[in-house]
Image 1 (cartoon, rainbow, N blue to C red):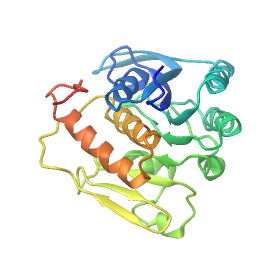
Image 2: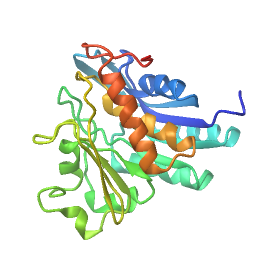
Image 3: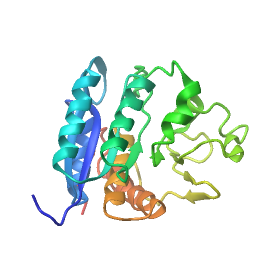
Length: 251
């Protein structure tokens, strides 16, 4: 493998349509000229229009896979997608931190599919802050932020400085400011406005955005720059077709 490309790992679900999950992540990694690896947390039966079934991969199998890859490669960044529980997520994070403490971690907290299938149950949200302290960035949309941190927007929850990680709040589901993303850092909020591109809804767009950010972090970009460049990439992807599956190479 080329020594000029950093290694980036996706730990996420397998979507046979290729629009989301590890297949979408690998396409994104390749366009960013990083070397992509993938570990599946689940196998699914779905298309871009419908979700039918999911079978979770055993946690022990996922952990063994992580350990094997990290023993053989210097992985710069990890993107995590669907997981069934906070316990499952915590074990993944703890393993990565144990074998490679400096690896950057981005979590796209996919709680429900666009077809309303519930992937993750927050059965012990008292542990949430302790767990996400191991993550460099989480990328929820407006629906997901309300599940993770009730009152985050309405009650200005972020002002309490109790969330121990950076948050990129995606504006695609905003009722008042569609497409306006906000990066919440410890002492700063950075607003990212949409371009004038005509964008169409895409299946798996959150996967693409978070894997683009992970790629940029592996390329030694700052968190702010990584998010801004990823927004440019996702807007090109969203404007590439009028269908639910986009093109990853947009000239």
